[in-house]
Image (cartoon, rainbow, N blue to C red; front, side, top):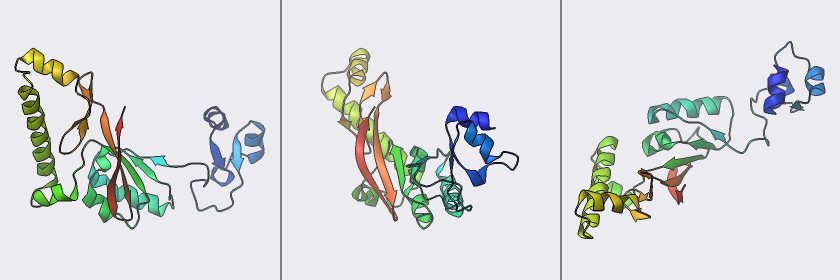
Length: 195
């Protein structure tokens, strides 16, 4: 075990080492061991800035948030677009630390009021369809009427603003994401990011 700790250069609390591993042998092999004395914490504070937690769906937010809270892990969470569900985030606001999300979908409060009686999936479908149709009509109005012209125009798209995201197309993929922050019950867009 101490070999894998050395290779990965982990910083390990001496209180979290398995019973058979003696601190002296770990120290002599070059593993950085902290003498942080509070044995109830699983994370050594001051040595990690955030924790990356991908999830499969927004229904996992409350489970993950509660687990982090119970383990007293108060680090900011970095999440994938599956974390982008305001209702689920607000439901966990009392136990969820700061959350940073990369997302391809964000609508303003004004846009939300226009679709307030729709389900989350219907809202996404509505804005994806609206954005796609506006983009296609915009490109067709620029005389891109053949399939080849339209394809070439879409392949060179940069910073096109759809109702829910910007588009910068590279190799048939949108490379524009939004960085969002959830803190104290509020989800806000921080910036656009092109990779």
